[in-house]
Image (cartoon, rainbow, N blue to C red; front, side, top):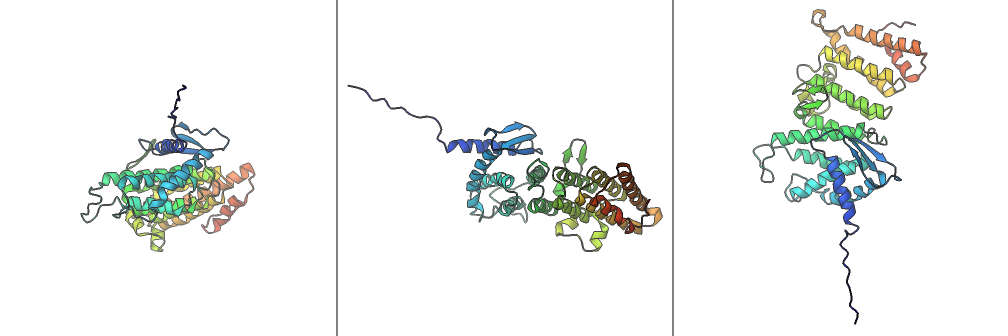
Length: 354
C-alpha cells in the first residue's frame, strides 16, 4: 500500500512580491532623517532591483510601473474623501494613501488629483479654533516637519535626472508655490543645506535658495519655462514694485513681505547669481528672460534718495550688460537668446560698447 505525500508550498504567492517591493520603495522615498533625493529612472532592460546609495536612487522603469499600479489601487478609494473629514477612512489608511501619492507623482507628475490630496493632507494638520481632530492635537512641530518634507519632495522631483516632464510640469511648480503661499512662516525656518542656513523670517536666504532650485532644474532641463515662472512668482512676493502694481498673487504671499521685501544687497546678489548662470547656459532663453525681469524689478530702488541707497543699481545693470558684451566678444558667441538680452539695454538706458 503506497502512501501519499502532500507537499506544502510555503513560498510567497506572486501577488505578495510586488507589495514587498512597493514597501521597500516607500521606505526609500521617505528617508529618515528627511533629505533631498536624486532619483533616476533606469531602462526597462535593467534587472528589477532598486539601486540605492543615498541620496541617489535608481529605479528600473518596469519596477516603478508595478509599484505605480499598487499605489493607484491604494489611492483611488480616497479620491472622493477629504483627509480631514470624519468618515474619510482610518488615519493609517489615509496615511497609506498619502504615501502612495509619492509613487503616483513620480510616475505621473501631472496627476492633479494626487497633488490635491497632498494639499488636503497638509491642511488637515492645521489646528484652529480649539478643534481637536481625530482625537489628537496636531502640533505645530508636526506641521513644520510635514511642510519641510513636502518642499523636499518637490525639490527632489524638479532637480533629479528624470525624463524632463517633472521639472517642466506646471502642476509640480504650482504645488510648490501653493505650499509657500499657504504656509509662509513654515518655509522660511530651519532650512539647512550644507553651509546655507535659512533662519526664521530670513526672506533673502529663502529667495536665494528658491532661485538655486530653479537653476538646478534649469540645468537638468533647458528652457524650463515653468521653473523660471515660479522664480518670478517668488520675486513678486518680495518686490515693492510688483506689490504696488497688484502683481502679488495669493493672500499668503502678502504675509511673507516684511519690511518691503528684499534689501538692495540681496537683490544684487540674486541678480548676479542669475547672470552667472545665464553665462554658463547662454542658449537658454528662459534664463535670460528671467534676468531681464530681475533687472526691471531692481528699478524699484532707483526712487530712493541717493543717501538711502546701499547699492548703485544703475551701476549693477551697466556692469552686467558690459560683462555680457565681453563674453560675446571673447567667444565670438552667436545666439538669439543672448542677443535678445543685449537688445534690452535701451530699456535700461545702458549704452552699448559696440
